[in-house]
Length: 520
Image 1 (spheres, rainbow, N blue to C red):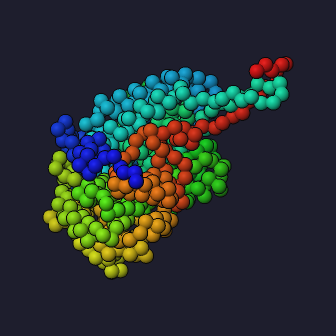
Image 2 (cartoon, rainbow, N blue to C red):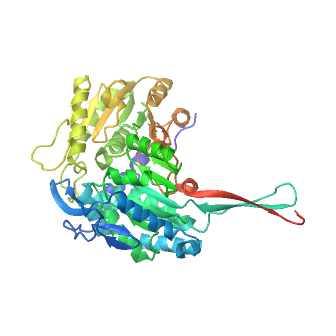
Image 3 (tube, rainbow, N blue to C red):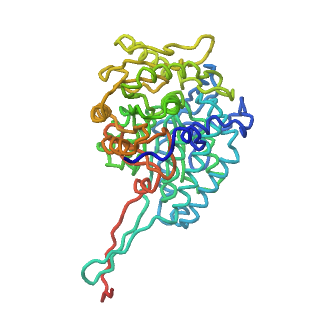
């Protein structure tokens, strides 16, 4: 029987995963707890503008519940102007279209360098606006985003077509051409990282962009827009329009937009897909919700599995589309796993996200906090056993929720079927491999999954049976620019990251040239 080569001790010693990065305080510089808010407007043609309607909205600090700044609220008219700017930048003969592919790569490298230069400021701004711990913003989100841009910068002059040995006297080849004007709608849970995921492959392949950040967390996207200008991108190549759902809808329904990339809820993803069908059949890639199963076999290293399952759910306050919220635990170790998971959740440090000792900050806004508390109430009402947390922490202003763990969760309970998007772990008992594979797949989602075991044969068997875009073995939440990410079923379609992402932003053109005589 094949065995996983890493022992439990070696697994616990891993230092290059996200959990270790979050906890690495040794090189963590002091945050800017009150960073200057420099950009709050609409960014079009490398210039800052007020919204055409004159409307503004407040962005709220989720830790204090106090307003941070007033942001210009773009709407359909602003989207029209931004799309026209992007279309002009994409015209034949424009500086962007005539630019060497290697120069596009150099500009992306430059943008990554500028983000690295301003890493403390950007991480501080992300923590202020989003509520995630500064240690995470600085050690995970920013480095991962920067690596993503550099990865795709390297691809800029390496995506190309092929020559094809066609019958007859013809010279046949393919061209990989940019799709055109790309609408990009990013979420509030990883604003900087998701912006990098969208910008990297689109710019590397020569597209132009109109990006709408989430209204809850627009500040870092607006600052990065200014860095785009500083990096030297021509005007109109990247445009950023802050606003609410109607702003995103205007982008999705625009007939001069060639593609929309969206990360967010499944319900909104459906609307974007419908908008494509009702307008110009623009390309759509969707990275949507999840209810990811995390399968713990009885032969696993208990300490490591408990800690990694905890991390797989509670990372980023549980606000991850791939959070391992359905933790399936083999019957032999279920009771011990429940006890240890509850103990770990109770020890989780909740508080000021600028404190380096904080593991968990607030939820992004009051709406999300109330939704999570409502789901916890539903779980108790339907008979799940609450073994940790379950309410708001005492003595803390802001949108905090206690780290919460439910045991004795049944598959048909609401908390086991619907995405909670918060710090709520569900522990579910199973007995047999085929049983747990079937139950794990019994979901409308299929974004991610994981299995913990020392037996590689069992791991590979489970991996082959799971219907999910990413499956981790003896780890969780490990993402990288090189590895594609996306979902099955209602978790969306298309892939971000890796070479696979480039195909989402290119058209393949066949060129067939009549020649006098072909010679092989």
